[in-house]
Length: 282
Image (tube, rainbow, N blue to C red; front, side, top):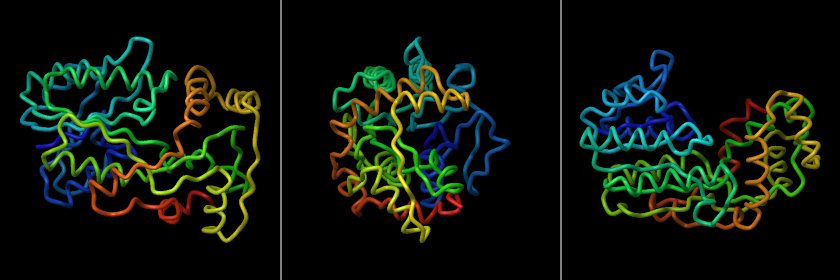
């Protein structure tokens, strides 16, 4: 039995669907299973990293776990610590943690630092482990959907990196292989798409799919922060994201071959993702 945490997220939902389609026994953990629409055959279970008392039932009879913590605060990787303790008690054999590419490139921003500490907890658990380190998600384009839909404009921050963006389904495909085959224990994989795209090229691809030009407008960091503050989305998390973007210009363009090596097919393109989500852009 495989337990997928973060089962309603971008990667977790794709992984649950893929495992279920392959006939693999899968249990999907979410805070509100009654609200989740999982495929037939998937066992939905209530669980919350921040409520350790919910974890033993979620882990009962589980051999392998896909680990997706909800986030990191100043208290450190408490979610991984809670999960590891419960996993040891339940007799889990293998933990597969979703991390971020910056860990492998030495990034020091708060988001990457949280993942690095989380990796350490998993790696020191005494259980078999594998770490998946994806770069920028194609799904991040959700954040531009509103203005693209209304104005055909994509507002980006000056210095936003060129990114070898990855489709969440490719991450899920790699995770499915790692969770169901041997030989991945003790390994950390950087995962990217197959092409490095600037924000301007990303906008072109969206425009090509829409059949209309999408204009890119660059904002200063101060302008971005002011806009997010206006929307009530500013604060430490935005500052951490901006710092990650600053640092990731040094590596986010680098292309890894791990997706193709593990899944035996090329990564999906940004056009694939845009075509699947074209309704978001009006």
